[in-house]
Image (cartoon, rainbow over all chains, first blue to last red; front, side):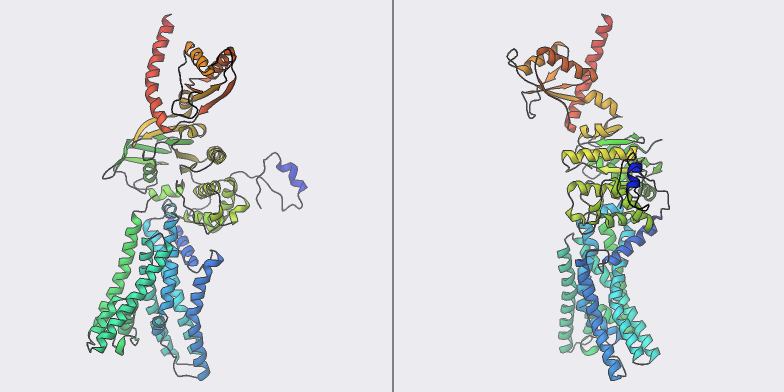
Amino acid sequence: MAVEQPPAQAPAQAPARAGEQTRIHNIGYRNYDGPRLGRAYARRSLYSQSLRGSYGLGRSAKSKVLPMLLFVVMCVPALIMVAVAVATKAKDLPVDYTRYAIIMQAVIALYVASQGPQSVSRDLRFKTVPLYFSRPIETADYVGAKYSALASSLFILTAAPLLVLYVGALLAKLDFSEQTEDFGQGLVSVALLSLLLAGIGLVISAVTPRRGFGIAAVIAVLTISYGAVSTVQAIAHEQGSTSAVPWLGLFSPITLIDGVQTAFLGASSAYPGEVGPSSGQGVVFLLVVLGLVAGCYGLLMRRYRKVGL
Amino acid sequence: MTVIATESLSKRFPRVTALDRLSVDVGPGVTGLVGANGAGKSTLIKILLGLSPATEGRAEVLGLDVATRGGTIRERVGYMPEHDCLPPDVSATEFVVHMARMSGLPPTAARERTADTLRHVGLYEERYRPIGGYSTGMKQRVKLAQALVHDPQLVFLDEPTNGLDPVGRDEMLGLIRRIHTDFGISVLVTSHLLGELERTCDHVIVVDGGKLLRSSSTTDFTQRTAILAIEVTDTDEHPDGTGAVRDALRARGVDTHDGSGLPGAGHVLLLTAESEDTYDLVRDVVADLGLGLVRMEQRRHHIAEVFKDHDEQVLRNGDEQRKEAVGHGG
């Protein structure tokens, strides 16, 4: 415990205190002449602070509840599947690695909606942003750190259940090489998904300093787009225009990822009729995903370029 | 040594000229930057931090060009914004540690410096509680701590006394003084209250409409611009005590005005204290008349008064020179 004392009193009172270790000195102001680690270190610090913050670490107990709960909700079905597979000595896992995130998309959307605004709206609302820019970091560092932090936390959220499935599959003595390949493809898929959803979530959140609006807007964009695309795809499928079904998948984030993994990552499509895009169409899907990721980054840079003091 | 140097620095926005060919040199110590709202104070700080390019002219901070060395400058400079900038749901310690790391301090050093700095600005046990529950005065201290935590060579304090009560204001001004005397850090502090800065600063720069109005050391300023307010009792002998003092002072060559428009007008006399002698003169005049001196205090001026005084000053200086000439002649 540091207690400031006038220098004149310090020697007189110090012996009266019990034990040598509790002696209190007024050391006055000390200059700092240690290392200053600069911009890259500041960017890493912001990244780790944001990443920890997206699971409520280093924040209040209240803010840990939702992300931790969502994390558990993401992993529990995987645990159950693994338990079933091990117990029944099944020949395959009940769900593909690549399909898991599509099934659990509502949970992922909730996570993006809660943690995206948490990451950027707070800084805007409490006007902390100018403090960051009065330090060595530049706009690109701030945007880069926030983006990669949310993408990383989403990756942790989506990859953890896949890891559970993989470990379970090995325990159930399923084919090692096949499982490893599928697991790898699943990881690539959720990595793309994390990048895409983090970008969309942050762009929407960075528009408003109000966290509530951010949460509502992110949920709306993710669920409405998926709902609309699925409905229109179903109608198209019913009416026999099967060639239109894959193209429609371009218009929502989840169906985009579905398309990419169907074309390149050996996934079976969740589209109606299980007609995913062909490899040729898949290139378009992949380009759109990468374009969206780059676009989100660009929009964020624009958003923060003008944020002054 | 020059801490800040600007050379015909201008900043023009499509509709406003925020800074107009501003050239100043600021040495080490505490420097006040005074100006009304919109005078260009914040724009200047933004340019000096290397966050906003100047339209023309150049500026150097700690010998580094703001246009090209912004990052290096920001590593060595602290900034305390005028507005609220603190998240309410974290403790002062957590927040300041994070800001220290954002300035490049390694984790251990960041924690040590945070504990030290919070103690120096006067935050003790409360530093572990969330900032949301702090008083305005405590929040201002946290804002100051985050500007000092990385031991900068220079800090920019934007309106640090805003929203504080008189006691908090005095404490903050004392703290600002200590930043230089005890910590050895140069300070550029903005305010729209000149009186406040007179007590804290070594040097005061007045800007208006982006132009440099005055730059001089505080001793010049206080000698010239101290305005005294005096209030006296009435006696049977002098039923209008205020009037009697006014006449007596005029007879001794000191002009007063009645402070019309200010609170207490009619009972209060305002006069400019040219030097220490003026205080003695007022005391003697009041004593000779046998009146009770209810109060004699220095008035804090708003910036508008400085401008008015500035004009009057020119006239008065002219008068003085004439008077002196007459004196020498006689």
